[in-house]
Image (cartoon, rainbow, N blue to C red; front, side, top):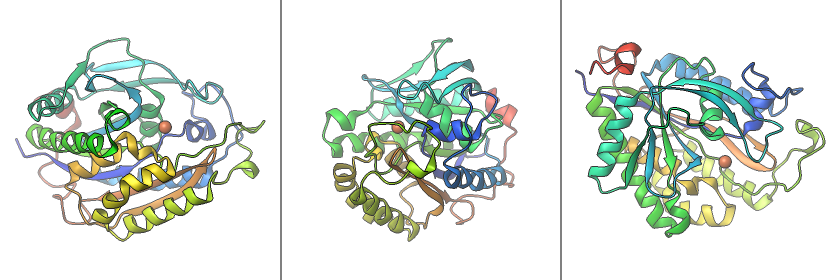
Length: 317
Ligand SMILES: [Fe+2]
């Protein structure tokens, strides 16, 4: 078996409004569109993902909250309806997905070996959260690539930010080890908004874009500062500023996915490709890509390391 590797990481935020604006058959509510620049950003990201042809997509979502430890989806086939509790008027999505349980178990095992509380989620009727579903739908609406879902332990919210993010760093390193051990060619998805200051009331027509703009000018300036650093590949500077950004912009990266992804990739000082930025009910959202294949930091996506998706899914490794 070839050694697995991470092909790319994406900052892939999950406002359910993006799914609502797209009107896929899986989502019940209908819209007249809206949030087009962000949805077009995801279209560009989809093209990159298509070229990478990964075996598996790993997503860490802030909205699968597990108070005790880091949990991993551990049921091979999951189906049901996912509803956003804040915006049930926009997101009632019928999902069906395949989980790469072997990789999930390897992630769980490695996380435990590194001292984290870690657990497999084995409930066959589990309702997957809207953050996981929205990110996966927006990046790969075909749903034809197995996934690994990671919960948010939310340790940064009850420990200090630094202690909590330190746990996410450990989780990222454990995830990388599991990917390498199982021979997977993996793409990581950090399901996080940047500035998270938002409006308290929804417009009468949610997709009325004349009502959409940053809620906070200071938050917007923070987003631009962080994105510009990321575009320049100044990763260590971003992580130096991260606790201050989180405090001052109420940034959702506090929940850990962003740190998890960068830790797994080894914090490359690699310019990120901005596919697009936009606000959703005033929050700042960027779709960005760090393509390790293009950067020469991973083997060719079409190289001999490639496994068939079937073999990855059913654990021939
Ligand atoms: Fe969120």
